Image (cartoon, rainbow, N blue to C red; front, side, top):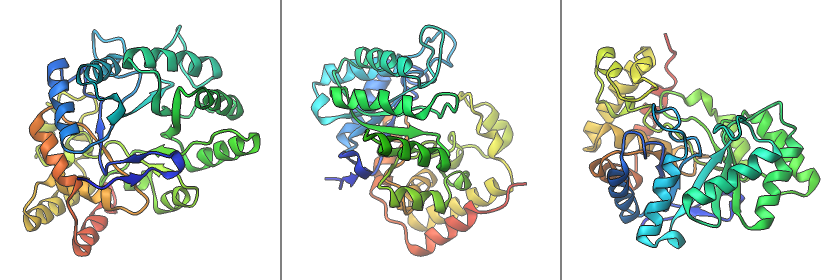
Length: 320
């Protein structure tokens, strides 16, 4: 059985890997999504990460597709009590508006609960920081959901350190529930987006950390060897942008470490995040059960100090 990790002060415990739900209703249709979710659950993954806006960016979609699929799957499997659901509010338009105002949060949670076919959300995020919305208004709205039992924990996604700090101060001053989880963009190609000082800040404030973009749009899997190949990706965020001096060094190091460890490059990339101090568990998506099996293996992979040092050095290569 996979060991659980304490998720900051949230009161939640999670497996060392979180299943990404951004692909459900996008590059994975409903039957495929069910198979992928079954494989994650069988492998010991306890949390699924999604958002109300997944996948409004796909032609023909309106948003909420991922939540709807997850809700159907949990109902079909009868496993809601064994699955933790994390979703987000702020990006999906509601009545023509976006944001994390009191009204948006109150309406957004009800829509997500309906799509997920549940009466509570384990972890509810502000998807992005909206500086035009007073932080005390957002804090009061989230606190109200916590007290109503509709949300078990709240998190901040894509927040700068200073803004997370002021949000924590605001909630504390009002005696309200604070953010207990951060979701940053963090992988071997974006180490500077979640630097050591921010990781230390989260540790000091008992903030759990669940990074997204673990494989950098598939770039870190090593399946793209040229810019031309990467441009053919079905993803909207083309991995072609990572072909630079850092990308070259990171891929070469991944290839070396993977060969020495006898595993895949994707497994090394995920295991590196899991082993990084200050990180609770990375979020990774899959569109095939074989990919899930690879990710599950990465969840239990232990990297040597020498390999961690090589990967850390590669991640700090200047971009040019």
